[in-house]
Length: 256
Image 1: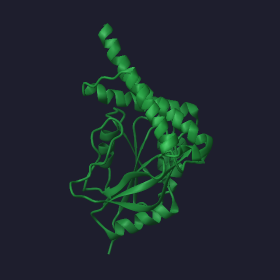
Image 2 (image 1 turned 30 degrees about the vertical axis):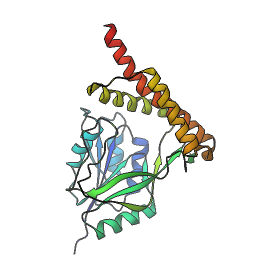
Image 3 (image 1 turned 60 degrees about the horizontal axis):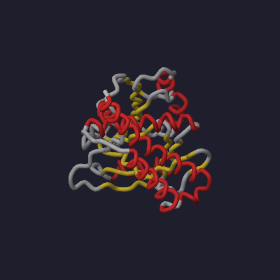
Image 4 (image 1 turned 90 degrees about the vertical axis):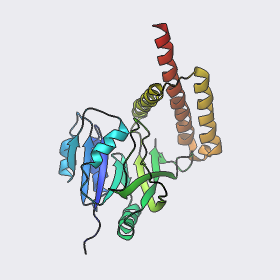
């Protein structure tokens, strides 16, 4: 009797430094799909050398739609979604194999553990960071969101938890954080603007202060040492920038 097949799908762009280790951590998969949005590095060579299929869509439609397109390349019974800067721990790998063998209709979420500027965060609201990543291929897909896309959960469907951590190596440097954060802020503002939403600088300040207090105090980020303080400050900054970006667009349009 054949076992249920598993595809790992990785959405990527210019991830040559990460792809080999990411793919190596899922050597138990039947298919690995790297769906690229237009890399200028040697991502394709590295992915193919590691045994993955490499596909591209360079006309960026947003994260949700890109994931939908990637899922069309899957030939297996199950999909496990990864980012290139993530690694499947041995315990998680075993848990995934047991899950797909036991239940053909479940959707699973995974505890993601992030390495930030020199340590794994245990607090700040970052751990356990439950992310829904494993599902039967034909059961569902991601929504159309430009950013912060979500897997669509069928009505009445239960989401179960897997054992083991998904290790997330988030930021290579401060510059990497700021560039990545700016991209998310722009996409967030794009979405809000498309729905006719407006913002103010005071909203940005209030949300930023709230973000810092929640992460550093309520979520006990102070127990993560200097890294906990730093990521709380940076997250507050990123929150402010989202609202400021939307405010600037509205302000500029009125002056034209």
